[in-house]
Amino acid sequence: MDLERLQALNSMEPFRAFVLETAGGKEIMIDEPGHLALPPKGFDLVTAFAADGQHYLLTLASIASVEVVS
Image 1 (cartoon, helix red, strand yellow):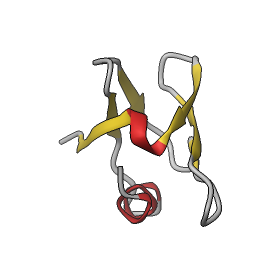
Image 2 (spheres, one colour):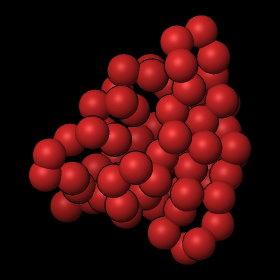
Image 3 (tube, one colour):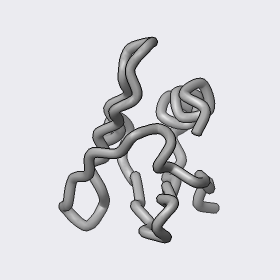
């Protein structure tokens, strides 16, 4: 996954919920601004605080797609 794409989604105004889909098929709903902690340049570990109360540690490579929820 492209870090710049995630940064744009994470900071869009007004914020719109989005779903991360992992390479393994897991869907992770991000429904609040700031619930996706992105790594600094040169790193690839993403922390996602999902709508279901779970949190996930993901690499950028493990995120297969992102879709904004309408």
